[in-house]
Length: 260
Image (cartoon, rainbow, N blue to C red; front, side, top):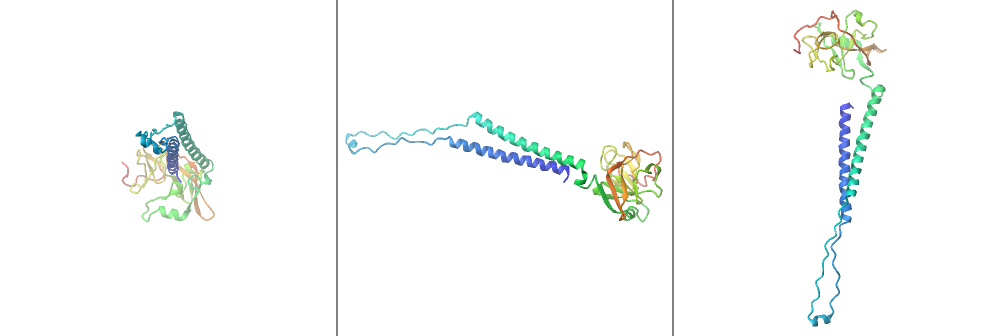
């Protein structure tokens, strides 16, 4: 579950709890009030003796006492309101602590949840390399959602700036999708064969190397390796930053830009 979904779930829980507590409070108040509402009472009168009729004196009509209504004392209402607020705050605080705890566990021990932040198996490295190169020689990266990564082909000879950083494996790079300027997701532009940020216009070639725009460096990339089965393993917990280059290793652009 994503953070946004967790926050939305927490909000629903808090609102539901508040509604339930409010209903209970109103019901309790009505019950208390009903116990203190007196019923109308009448004075009992005895049957007039037979002899009384002969005197011509009429008996007095029965008297009806007004109902005795006892209102809730202000302090009683105050206690009920305080109890409702205390319970609502307790539920909200408990939900917040649970959310904070889950986020902390995911940060400190990412292997508990899997996905981004862990080692992601992207599939057979040779198959991925074949998919990135089109029959006409153009490039189309393979996007790996779990790793938030574009798999792109690397040059035959590893450029010097990447030697010893373990970012090339099986002839491919694992390039982070996030722009190094303000973190926007950078989509691929097929016509220019590069990455173009729609937020502020930063542009990068097919290897993620900086070309133009406000980005301070090239796109970040992940440490990658090949396991015993020939699969590409992307270590999304290990991000390697690469600076701007005075000379790009791959020509760019190859066609019209997608972002002006």
